Image (tube, rainbow, N blue to C red):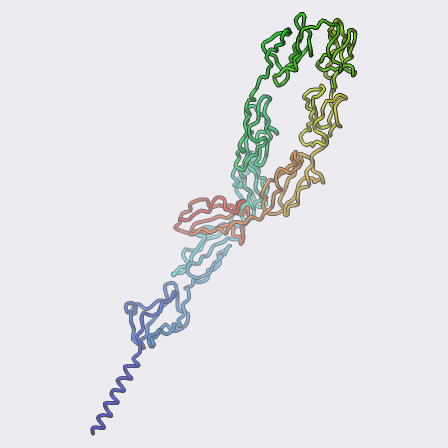
Length: 570
């Protein structure tokens, strides 16, 4: 009997131990899904027993599609829910008489845009939206309409006298910009079959620099206005010095680079003080003398003049070498040959220190000087030399000649003067620029002025040059560019400058794209395209209940941005 009770107790203990070991785990809150939600009767619970089943329903805007709506707690984990929910859909919209709907889809939030056939206009709501209750609003009506284009809306253009206010499809209008504006795009536009102008251009403000003003200066080339990158040369009037750059450029902001100034030259007056010769007399007498002034010097009685009888005030404010007045020696002999400006003894005997009475010396004019009049001989009489009567003047070279397409600028035409060759604008100098007046005339060969040429402009893909092109393009020649496709970026016209270079690089033609125009709360009523290029237009309208802030009509501009900015729906 005791053995039986022992066996029963052992079995009870084993059963208790096993049951304690295999108690199933509880589950926490059921799994969340973006398109499904837990039935409200389970929402307050945070823990569930093994084997319990919960019920799911589709989230608002969704409806059951397939699978079971339940999930079960098994050993502490929720079984995967195989229920599928799909977005609720609206019924397909029927066609509009004389029109149609362009639909994004039939799911909640999708839009259907009403589009009328060619020759009809829309009356009523143009946009309908799929809601939980179906498509909102009512079908619009497409009424017969005479398609017209109103006058092209291009800001800053000239309105031709008698220009119409309405145009039929295929009518064309020439666009001319007001003064101070450049045309970006095609100069002629066509009224489209949708009542919209095709690829309207833009009149963009021209940036220019006004004529620069430099007091006491000259501007070359002269003009009333200049384009960016144009340059001018600045020189000062006589008596003024240029302080700053001699050439300045018109900047991209319509302002000149820092202009120089013309300052009055500092004039230093150079003079020679009155000369002093002991035992001598000066004629004419003065306190001061200017350069090139000369004085005659004579000695007092009983004194002999040793040196030149005439001296000149030099350009440095110093007199040429002064003579001396020495006491006469009681003799009939004469001293060394006297010196004279612009003349010198022509034979070797002039080197003697003493000459007998009756001796003579023959003089000749210095290099660059020619005899005008007077005797070339002086004689020794009573211990003194007779006065030299020879007069010498600087030789004249006359004109240096004519230069075709240029001229000479002279410092003078006498011996030692110079003639500088200057070519006219558009010509370059070949040969020596400066000639000097020598004893035998102007030295060197006369230079020539040859035309300046520019190399042919490089070919640019997509552009077309409207003017003839030469192997050597002459100065001043203008080339006009035109784009076969795309928009022209850069200068429409370039010209050959006086330096043999083009004033600007050639323009390029680019297909300018604008981003897809999206206005939250609004729709595109006209101008649907997969890609928007320069000149394309779009018309917007706000959804019912919203108000348009801004312009409803925008154009793709030359910088890839919409002009004006996209509107807002508030």
